[in-house]
Length: 141
Image (cartoon, rainbow, N blue to C red):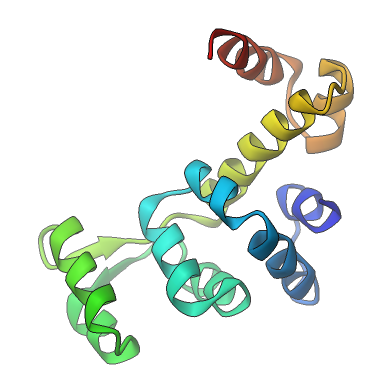
């Protein structure tokens, strides 16, 4: 969880990507529900380390199908892109958006571990109100 915590508190250093990737691989099934669909597909297609590098490099950009075809060989991956993206391109989630998805995952993970709301807010670098909203949603589930 240390690398995930480091990731949500910028700046991200390139050397941190490897440890972050290892943690993402361990929790990928659960973590993926908090990420943008395209980010999940990139991480699944390239693996966590290469996928993170790709997402960081292309974050907040619009990538054309032609560029995707030249970078990715998997027919299944490309079919998925054609079905789910529109207007000949796909928008890549921003680094901040990726960090927020991981932050949401960490908040719920720490709530389930029984950490206090104040401790969670301090740990993940967010406001107490955000943690309270997640706590309320978790209570309703």
